[in-house]
Length: 239
Image (cartoon, rainbow, N blue to C red; front, side):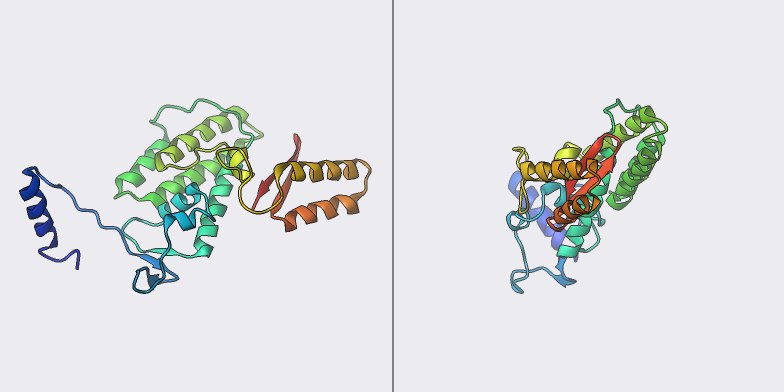
């Protein structure tokens, strides 16, 4: 009903009559929010508040979830879709991990242009996110062969992500599930406990006690902690 005549005309008449100023030039209508493919509404009792959602997901994850659909398309809220948004954001932050901070090129490069084209196309945020994943692919490809170029592209990732309100956290802090106060949020082992287990695993590996090393890795994985071994040592992240 909101889109049918004379809804907008009435809104304009009331607002301009009350304030004597021009009301709006454009109307933008977002798609309905659904829960498991059913329209969210108070009458159905299938609604959530932002405060409730943020007890389980971080603000950037919720923002990514919203950006993943065009604003005029229905937005289907499910735990699975929020988990997919978290996983996608984790992939982007994993790309930025351990990449040296470098100044980005000017805003006239091909990735900037592709991003602008997407946003100029009726705020096509899913396509804008696709540009970030193109950058992510290139950063990972160049990480070893050309660290300088990888750093420049990573800086563009952060810059364009900032336009969308994502990738604003420190990669290590995000991947380790910390809050802005620096403490690990949610359930699961705390940082000191994780680091201690990683140290015990390192001792086991040096002693070539592979079964013990694997046992510790499996124990951490069961607790939602993924270990990643690399030339600079072992890093970890929450899942």
